[in-house]
Amino acid sequence: MNVPFNYLPQQFADPEPYIAEWRNLAASSEFTIGPFVEAFEAKFARYVGARHCVSTNNGTDALILALKSVGIGPGDEVITVCNTFYATAGAIAAAGAKPVFVDCDDRFQIDTGKIPAAVTPKTRAILPVHWAGASPDMDRIMTIAAAHGLLVVEDACPAVGAYVNNRHAGTFGNVGAFSMHPLKPLNVMGDGGMVVTDDGGLAEWMRKYRNHGMVDRNHIEFWGVNMRLQPFQAIVGSRVLDTVADLVRARNANATQLDAGLKTLPEFARAPERRAGHLEAFQLYLACFQQRDELLPFLISQGIEAKVHYPIPLHLQQAARDLGYKRGDFPVAERQADELITLPVHQFIGPEQIDFVIETIRAFYAD
Ligand SMILES: Cc1ncc(COP(=O)(O)O)c(C=O)c1O
Image (tube, rainbow, N blue to C red; front, side, top):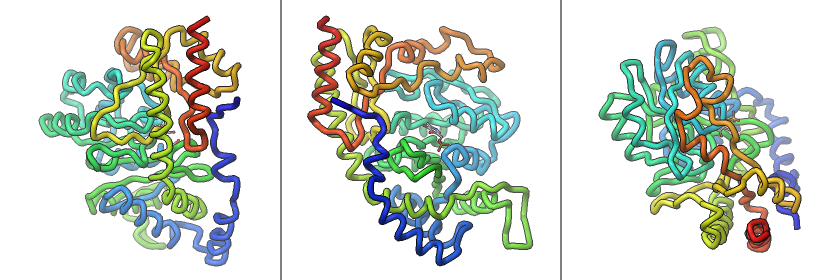
């Protein structure tokens, strides 16, 4: 049986509805921002429950824009987690600031208990990541930020469709950034990003900065850049957004089945605790396994497209060499990097395939 990780061939098997709308776009010539992009921004803001939404080229730009909008720059430190995608720390560096890492917890989320010790006089912000489409303890993070007078910039890139107590990921802090990369819950046919905020002043600044600092065709207020979302991607994103609640439901059904299956193998496998009040978007399904390095190729040999996100935490990457970290600094993330496997969980697989995954894992340990 085949259990693919990539669901894009199924998701976009019928491109006709998109092509039909692209014809309208072609006829309109509205190729830079314009009504297609603005309508999608308004729809996304409504969806997540934020006052303002500014679209960007991709999630990395969304993070850079979010950080710069609140004034993060050279000399500043930004606290984030060490088990995340490269772009989290890359965006902090691109804004001119220094990433300061803390370890994660057993849920693969930033360990909020370790944040206060990472605060220094240079700390300006906490940048929590909604890693894998799950959420850290946002209430605790907001409390810590308030106690230390820090900004909160959320990396909700993998987390469209994720909620904590009915509040959407990315709407807790001053600004939240999202990605629409093809393997995110809300995806487009290429790259796209979103920033949300309730602060009208920040939104206005971001709208200008992502468009050269322009106030009109002949005037710029400050030096900006081009981070604009392509209108043809806004059309894709707008259609896919209508399906997010359903696909998150389907992923949760698969995840619940995987969790139950792994619970029957407690000596070999450990899925993270699922918190009451948290709705996870399951961009990825992560769990830790004994003998990971033998199990992973075995799963792949059986047709299960398992992966590892990621085998090297950020503090041990060459890019972090000047930050002064060493192996042993973040033991939880380092152990997880050696033990975790990402299993397919997407909406185009169902109970039979999940059973096959569980039975294949069981067979591996039975040998
Ligand atoms: C946690 C996290 N942050 C940032 C990004 C960057 O998003 P993008 O690939 O759209 O630039 C991603 C995904 O790629 C991500 O998973």
